[in-house]
Length: 259
Image (cartoon, rainbow, N blue to C red; front, side):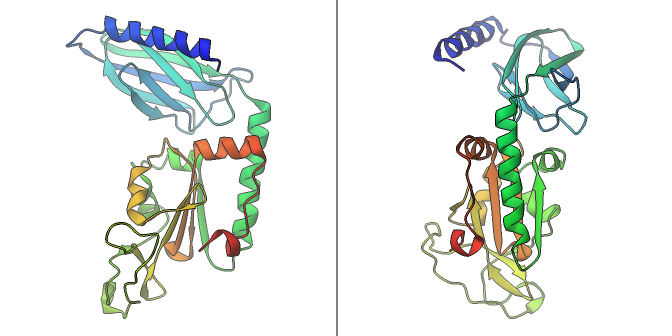
């Protein structure tokens, strides 16, 4: 979007915020996000209600529900491979149904598909077990953050990096790591009968420890990969996937991208 357009958007949202009553009644906004050209549902779209910054994700059928206040609002919706759309809406008490149509960006969408294909090729080259979820699977998982997602949906068992892991199996010793946080140690996962250190990457950058996963919600993430029971966990944000699509990013082999 151009700077002038965003200035208009900012003014519109400011006007909505000024018009909002201090103690408004509650309303339920239900809707569906669709492709403007085909009318097909758009899954994993981020839907934000302004000016209250209430966010949700569309499900596999493009549907969403937000509980908010009555009055004037602006629905801001976007999805990977589509442009952002703003829809003014006035909500009365009770339920209101809307449809949000997103215009496809063919060039961006093609780039995202190409990036996802390259990441899949890299996963296939890995010699051990790999599990992965895409944006739609993440959006419909019901998990509030990536730590819970990889534990409940991808079978990762987090544990302390102590001498003994769960079940009293002998574990690897807790080791100092230069990428860890203030205490100098990183998190562990239960793998191959031991507490193995877990390397977490977000957008191909090594993170201090596994705790970073709880900071990323489903609305932030386009894909997640779990290698070898969580000994390596890789998260890719929506922002990263869009940037990768624009630049034609080609991921390094894991032997070079991991350290």
